[in-house]
Structures are given as structure tokens and as C-alpha cells.
Length: 210
Image 1 (tube, rainbow, N blue to C red):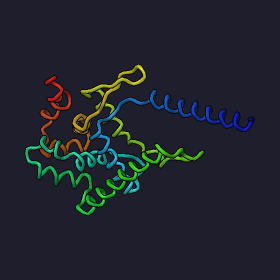
Image 2: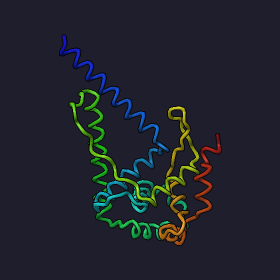
Image 3: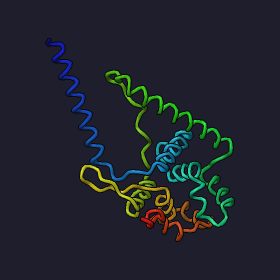
């Protein structure tokens, strides 16, 4: 009986620790992201890791959005083909790397889906760890996301707080508005329709129709 009592106590303690960790994470969370942006961020992390970077850079996130969401973002350039050439150069994307990253991304999603299924039917072992923390955001990327939070068109409730939900459009606009940024200057020089992008980032058309 004593053994089962200790086991229950340990289980309760682990639950409390997990709840405390979740509450701490929720308290420090300053925004959520849309599904499209989350997938672009996954690609961005893979790009950064492929060059052994210590942080996630603006160019990485821009590349992730370009690879994953170009069909939607390409409309903000008058000449999308020229813009693609520019983005491939800035983000250091070659056709070979493109296919490699896409294949790796597909494998990653498959593994994550399998892991979720396994977690449903199998209790994790005591002391098991995850895949590690994601790369820290660079100072410039932190500034971009902070600005994106200020212009985000959607918001969500979290533990009594209202937090912004970032979209690819508001992040792209924030990248284009980084003060004294070479990437921002190049984005504008590439023919980016900043005014059109800003209208959509701040007031999405499907939201205005409601």
C-alpha cells in the first residue's frame, strides 16, 4: 500500500509540475500564429538549422513564408517572377535546397503525426525529453514580431488576456517596415505593393465582409 501511495504522490507532483510549466508558458506567450504562419515557421527553423545557425533570422522566416505560402503572397508584387528571383537570392534558396527542405518538411510532419498518435495510446516514459527547444529569435526578428503584434487583425483569449494572432501578411509587412534594414529596402525595391499589403494585413477582405 505504501508503494502505491508514493506512486500516486509522484504522479500528482508531475501533474502539478506540468500544469505549472503550462501556466508559465501561457503567461509569457505574447501572440499566437495562424496555421499557415506556423508551417512557414517550421520551414524557417529547418533552414536555420541546415546552416547551423544559433538563432532564427528574418531571412529564414521570409524564406519559410515564400516556400510555403507564395501562391497567396505573390499577388503583392507586380512582377512575381522577378520577385521570386529576388527572394531566392536573399533567402539563399537553390532548386536543390528547395526540394531537400520540402522533402524534409514532409517527413517531419509525418513523424509528428505518428508521435501524436503514439502519445494517445502510450504513456511517455518517466524522464523522457522532447526534441529540444527551438532556436531563439534574433533581435531583428523579435522586433518584426513585436510590430506584427501591434497590427495583427485577429485576437484570441488566453487565461483572461487578449493576445494578437499573427498572419503571414502582417509579418511580411512588418519585415518591409524594419527601420534601416537591407532586407526591407530590397523588398520594396523588388516591387512589393506595400500599400496593398498593408490594407490586407490590417483589414483582411474576408474579415471586412462579416
